[in-house]
Length: 200
Image (cartoon, rainbow, N blue to C red; front, side):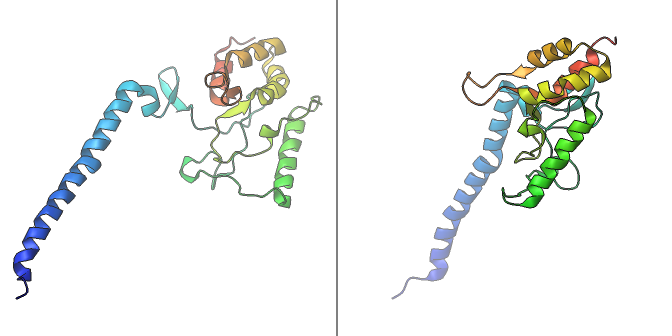
């Protein structure tokens, strides 16, 4: 005689619901609370979004670039995010392949803008100043990219170029454990340091 399915159903359903409730509690509540608490204790600055302060005001994040267009400031890496540059809600690159003519056209336009902003600078333009990053949010430029712009920034601010070069060196971030990556400069922090310099 076949077993009564109406009697077997509660014996199967009850443990399944108990496991579902336990896993929901552990993975949906306890684990996120534990990792959030650990992050806030061990990495409070990073967990808060790595904010950058100017006095008492939060002016940005060390992890997300900003658009600077004035010749008095260092310019960051081009951003290809949708709607506006450095749009954190639409992170992404241009997705232009190496054979796409638009890639060369955009790089050429960016190079022209750099030359127009500093006509006397005949140095080669570092590639990171004309090529957008994969995320579109890169807050850093290469040391070469910062040094290329130093004469323009120094001239616009009436500063000695050596002083601007020293500022670049002071804000150069070294590779992790000395070998992973390349030295880079955070553009927002460098520009804030520029604004803190005494006016000539």
